[in-house]
Amino acid sequence: MLIKNAIASGIRAGTVRAQYRCWDAPRVTVGATQLTAAGLVRVTGVSLVDDLDRLTDPEARAAGMADAPTLRAALRKSTRGARVYRIDLEWAGEDPRAVLREQIPDDEQCASLYQRLSRLDRRPSGEWTREVLEWIRDHPHVVSTRLAEERATDRAALKTDIRKLKALGLTISHDVGYELSPRGIAYLAWLDSRHGTD
Image (cartoon, rainbow, N blue to C red; front, side, top):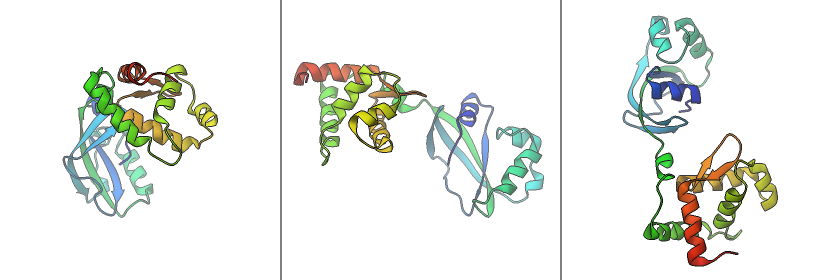
């Protein structure tokens, strides 16, 4: 379920407590969590809306909409499903990657990271993780298009690779480009001390 950044921020602040979706059947379950720009969001309820005309202004505002007519109009324009569901939501905590990237790994953790990245490097195009980490370290906040051009690779594929590094807490994404996290900086320093520099 796509949750826009403004809605995610509202869920975190407690001003947004629900969303409405047109689906043929529920696509989320109670207890499921979803990672958003504002952190983790948890589904606390899923219910069928039988009558759009009974939606109230307070319910619409709790979904981040101006009023009930605006919410009803948006739902009636949707072609994504035959039924309308209300999904109750709550903020469930910080993005675990954001927490992880602040954690400085010890030698044992660095060795574990090395093993995981070595597995990512095992592909026909060859090793890439260290080169990309070093490039991000040396070119913070530089648009990914430049890195894709320098590596002669597809930008979408490159961004997928960088997301793998982000999932390990090694990089931070920005509106433009990336930078190494404290965890990423520490890992590269460990790598240089154990495996040398190019």
